[in-house]
Length: 555
Image (cartoon, rainbow, N blue to C red):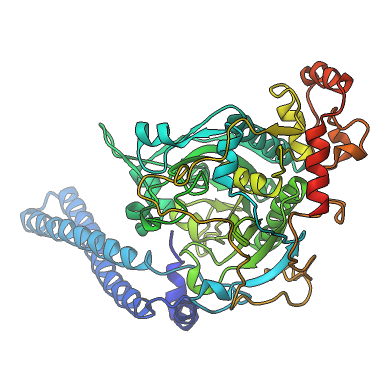
């Protein structure tokens, strides 16, 4: 992952000051820019010397050929050729080494930060650009890890015993919720937005991973697999999908290419010691549905906004209140020119937590991977690289946590309507997942070594978060009016927003029979689910569903 070296060369139309300014905005080392220029000059001198020696070698070869035709002695020329060949070999090694040094330093410099990104190194200064739903809370709410235990959805103790810190088994309803989110997410993107589904390899060769991951990720995030060849487990399907078209020329007419990637993800979380040790919010292994789009350079900012909208659509259909923030410049990874986070509301903690990251990496990844577009390079023409963008749709374990917190009721977890068709074949009543266990004892549900968690937290206030301003800017600065202001109530008021999930089955005579066709965002249930649905429809109303829905409405 690198910038175009010509950006550092004034004689090629580059402007190093732009790169220095971007480094300052990242709060990164701007002296690296001068170091790259210095190493590039050294490389150019060695390259020039090599080219001159290769010309000399060619001339000597021609002289030898001419003299041999005339049957003249060529011993002197042959001796010169031998010496020149040795010099060429030495210069080739020097050019290669010089190229490695320059590129190693070049790789430390981040992508050019987009002008719309707020400049700060404090994540509390992330700019809020949109809010959706109502941010309610009240005393007595249970945390996601307690709720997952109460529905019989996971076994953390045996997970830790088997696989260590942050390990878990998903069981029963937890497993079914995980699969429902995967199937719904893939269905939404493939059927409604025409994405191509891809299940990726779970590990990558070292050279392929080095082309798509930052150096810091190798130490803090990636698991190394030992064997005959050195490989790394993927941290996200973004990594193998980015390498999918490595060393290829793509026809402009084929762009944009939109992939929905499904994979299990593996992360060491080395930099998160002691953080989020409860439940399955931050774990070493989880499933994720990822958007990955490849565009022409002119269309990437438009696509960035569209990808964010698709993630918003997904969480609105689930009825999860959220806000969207633009990440400050000092918190961007090297590849991203701009990044949005979609943060879901967790009422028992009274705070927002990251569910989605949506980044435009422009041509930063494509250059290292040599993914180009348009016609093959002609003499005197610069190569044109595609732009690559990535966005989470759903990291399933985190989304399960958000559902548990926002849909808890006295008797169980109410199921978002769009997920009910995917749960109907497995649950007696797909509208509610009943509690089967008492609340866990204090300390249960935390990974070994984690701090004990106290009762329901009071809402936290963002001290420095920038407030929403203005309207949308399709050229890279999405700024929308807040859809709702935070309020001190209990749960998302799904009645007030037509797009929200509506867990109020008493108002719907056919509530036991999921009808996703009435919801534009819902995937249609398959035929095999219908017998169970008809069976459920014939049953009397589950009083716990009605009671739970009334509880959410009243609070």
